[in-house]
Image (cartoon, rainbow, N blue to C red; front, side):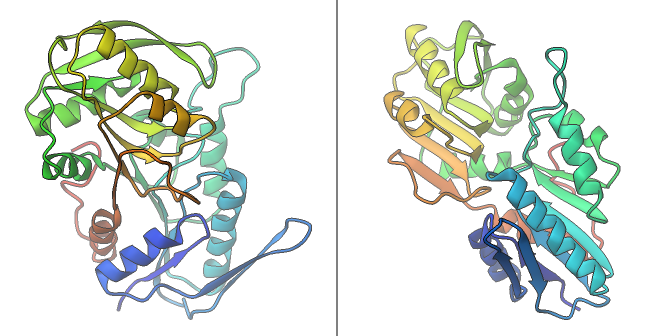
Length: 312
């Protein structure tokens, strides 16, 4: 029997693309917001005894999208779904995985506890900010990587970088993954975060002079890290054409303006989150639908997910 796929309002286009890839109809559900902000969710399919997947990146507004997901899960559980999987192309609060000062909350742990109330049998996530995040969740966790998808897109576009650059120490392992696939060396920039939106680059480890850089990161939020990295690379004598690959393009606040000023040659991102309007940048948007379609089919058929995991 085919599995059922439902979508919240966070990224219905991606859900529809996945449904099209695997040849299943997208499940019919209704999500209505009352004037006071409360949500009403109704599932218009018979889910009894079915294997059900709920696609909902918990991107902004994070609280609304997270609660939509929980209400969808509740509706499916009450309808008798046999197995329930949350598909989170982007996991909100993942950056808040530790305290950096007294009195701070650990948002990632709170998100893990909240999602645990959904009664999910499994979570599917793509390029979470830290591999250690899996330890916060008691629910089985399938961490996927978009790196092979983005690497293929870079090569198919005719881009031939000479070095893979991590814009901070946190992106070093991600850069190593890209570098293994591309057969390239890695350079790492040391970063100091001045505030939530501003950063300052300190030094570059690795050879970049005269080489075409590919800056990689798991996400672009305000664009401060990428813009500062591009400036630091040019000042250090890298090739002038800088290409960026990032899984999650949040484009928050001044991101579009900063990235435009960075004069990037190409910017490769996935469709893990939806935008109301694409920014005026040299964007190449790569769909996660083929990857997620294969993974959901594999989970439904209880097959191993070798080659898809971020740990492979």
